[in-house]
Image (cartoon, rainbow, N blue to C red; front, side, top):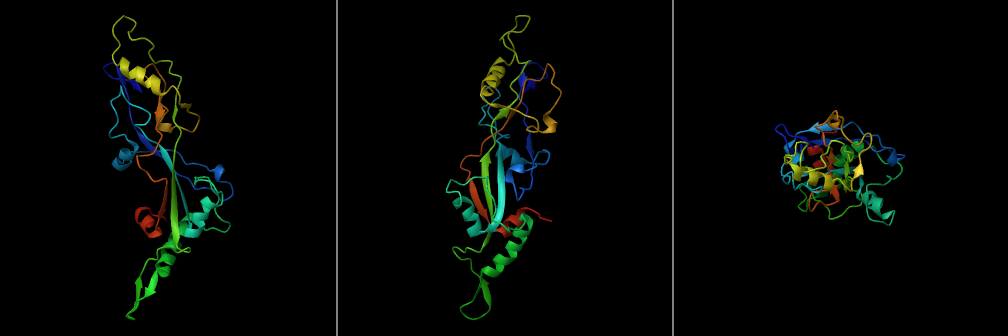
Length: 238
């Protein structure tokens, strides 16, 4: 949030992403890459940036933020990631000992699934691809979605506290200021590394604060199994 060029208040929106490989030994010791700014229209749409509420009515639920954790293995292994804890599925899991690296698992899984799903034709004229309803040995990519916590910069020493300015004039954009103050009241302070470098602009009298999005798009399935062939159609694994 910042001051507008002609007075009042202005909310500026942006979308960022980053990725990392999950360590095999300690999943919590993950080292994330730096944030990358994106203007991809599809990502902006998912994040809610293309259709936010008016600045004076914007809510934390309007701008989204989430993470996706991918794992690869047989259907049985992916099923057991949840079953081993006897708790609801989460993104905090440990792969079975001896599991392949994600890239190798996806590549090899595409090839092994093609062979696994081959069945002789009834007329004896060669083989055909027939996907079984369930095969414990079929390789799948498991994607688990989880919300990011709501975070913000709560100390706005430049945020106006009165509806009128120093000269007694009505403050332009006062409803935007007060709304922003309300939505950041209960959020968690942003810590070092939480915010992208591109958002760490010099804090001056025009800067009013920042809110990071959280939450998933409506009706998002939190756990999805993806065929390695379909995954490779969208993601180029070198």
